[in-house]
Length: 83
Image (cartoon, rainbow, N blue to C red; front, side):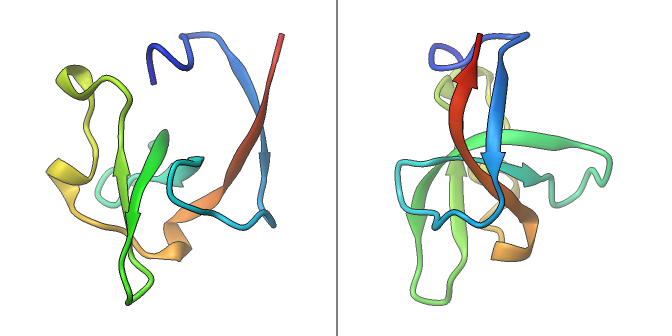
């Protein structure tokens, strides 16, 4: 998520927060079951599927690679960065 988040940053995630376009979310990777990722929500379609995008598109694996995901894959919204 460079430049927004850097390696080693700690974020607080709210699993009950409403997720909207522009929010950063913690999500389960749809194909790599042991991988969790922080991505920005770039779109939500009428069917409730979420398009995720990394802030550094040249280095990011996101919905351009794996497609949109359902809400079940989203663990919560990143609500703050802890220092």
